[in-house]
Length: 191
Image (tube, rainbow, N blue to C red; front, side, top):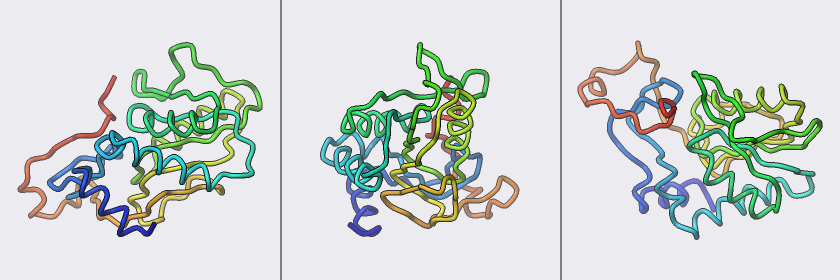
């Protein structure tokens, strides 16, 4: 399936929002991919997870980890289909951490699965967390890379769809976008 068809799925499910958004990265954009709205449909969730898994065929994967909150649904489905342990990292005092009794075994081969990246900051934090706990990141799987392919996170990185969307630093916001009230639908502020 090509990027245009994936974009159409996001539009049909109401998962491509338009307005003025502050992204998890802190950048501003007139578009927002709300993956939760598309992943609520089992056929799309199953398809996206299968597409990620197919990319990583032949690679030993012992666990899946995702950044909370956005990556949990797709990460859990990827782990379910692979039949491997699936955990998530969440913010505690602003820092990604393992909680809820989750652990990483020394040398465990792990893929990081996320719903959407703009700068990849949350994924990088999770990768650092895996390494700090002795795990080995063997790949990164994404539903949407909204950077147009400009974010490099891992030598073995895959996005179901790569979209080129414009985002702005807080001091670069165009006048017309500034006039639209800001929405923050991301999970960065979730405690």
